[in-house]
Image (cartoon, rainbow, N blue to C red; front, top):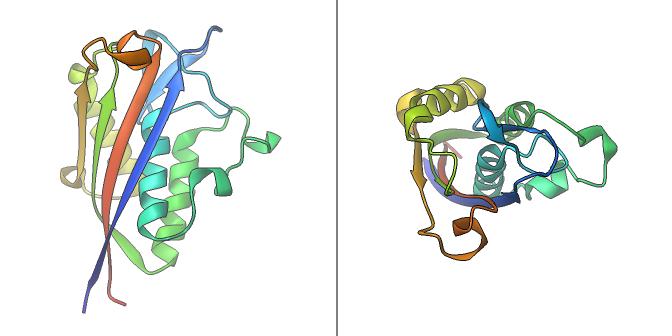
Amino acid sequence: MIGMRVGFGYDSHRFAEDERKLVLGGVEFPGEKGLKGHSDADVLIHAIIDALLGAAALGDIGSHFPDADEKWRGADSARLLEAVVSEVCAAGYEIGNIDATVICERPRIGGRIGDIRERLAAIMGIDVATVSVKGKTNERMDDIGAGMGIAVHAVCLITSGK
């Protein structure tokens, strides 16, 4: 019997005051203000990591890559996602699909969704057809709607033969 498990992830980051680059789903957005965070602050990948870890009951991003540990300062979140995918697979699971919603007033990600989906699929070693990314605004409500940062919701399905 194949078991199915669902995981949900959420992350948010404020825009940085320094000259950090913006990376979403492993894709750089030139000319856009970057996000504040201990690693590269790829909010999309961080939400996906939490969804995968949650589905497999393996903790959360903070337990695997604590921001109190200097070795993760400036870390490439794509490498963190690769490590989590390896751990999830070693636990006997396969990724069924990923669905994520990026919530921000800027940048508009619609024109880059194909690039993001392809990059995420490559990082995770899965078919691009199993990766969905959507962009939404927050209709100018709250801090996200005021353009102060970006939030992401992500959900995943993993399967196991166990």
